[in-house]
Image 1 (cartoon, helix red, strand yellow):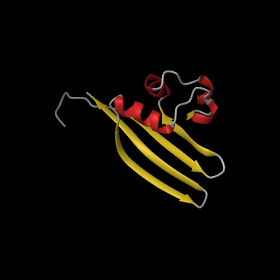
Image 2: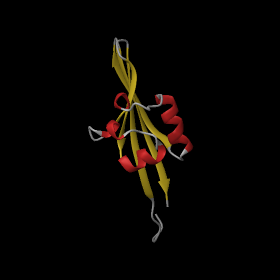
Image 3: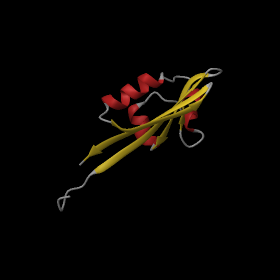
Length: 100
């Protein structure tokens, strides 16, 4: 890294839950301020557990709309994982935005 240069990273983890019983919902873990910048219409009640929880947001978007908003805001998918059992699947994306 060059001396005097500075890289800032904004990191958000998106966890998507797919359930045969409850449908789909997602969580966003990271800075509340960054999440509110990308999803400005998000409700304050969605953050009551210390992270964004889509079922608690009456104005929630689908997880594909939220992911698209992060990508349009300059975030890139830097990692992903998935796991699950019969009836419950979980996917996770690590979204990173670099700025200098």
